[in-house]
Image (cartoon, rainbow, N blue to C red; front, side, top):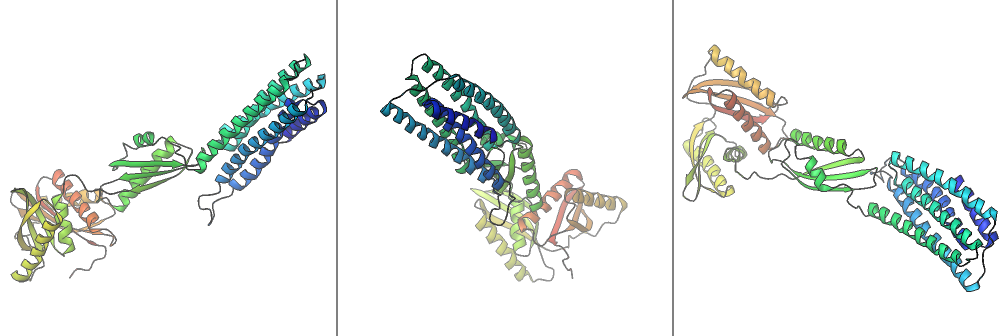
Length: 444
């Protein structure tokens, strides 16, 4: 700022004394440098304040506003020079060129080079749009001063009209730089897209559990970018799993784009293209206080028929049990478009028709099944595992206790995942049934 003040005063005083319009124009240009420095100091002071209740995203855009002000000052300078040019054209006159004029211009050009190089280097290191804008402003000073130097030389040779021509060129240079700065800062204030959405989408393709990146939006200045990611995940994903997916997205974006300040992830669940009839039947049964297992979809005419075993509370009459199961059948047909009929086998809960098996081999197999469940979902509470003989192998039953806030869909997805994993890893099990319930549930 101090150097710019010295340069501006030297050019203005010399230009006014000698009458060189181009030199006066250049002095106005340099005075804008000093003014923009003051504006930059104020803007950065405001921008450095931490977020508060009224500005939860911080005060970073005060620097952008200061940068916009610099562009406005450049346009004001261009207008002042145009007025001086018109006065010279209307009233006539020619500049008085001396060795002092050349010395002043050469000295100020050297200062401009030093200031521009330093400010641009610091602007890139700090990723400051204000410093880079001010460096461009100061850099234009050097080329403007060079043209003024040429103007003085030609004026000394008798070409007085060249002074007006050079002044006009200076106006064009100043106006171009000012409009460029205003355009860049306006993009920031208007939330112009900063990052390439396709590049960010490609970056997130390998994130585990993420089915699709629907939309990527970004905004803000170059050194404080805010990103919004809209993504799709399976509908039965648990809250913990969804949080882990979001954290993986944030980490990948921050690693590739250090300038990103914050990443907001919004999930859009979607239904799978292939209906999981077991999961749908479990969810419907649970809402009615029933349990189902061995759900088998079979082709029926132009749709699907579902065959399943339905567990009801022991002690019910056949009429009451039939009423509950009929409600389940109607619900499945109403909610699943392709289902035309539901065939059910009613059985009392917790009674499989075969005694518990307590052999060493069976107990070891039961413990292995519990290990599989605990490895997949260590935060769930797995208990009451019992094993019975079944046709061709064993039947396993166990309890899974989850937080009461867990959705029915999530709970059944966990049960289905564990049941499938146990049967895949331990083929001795012909049937695996998991009863999900809230933590600290009381059993009669």
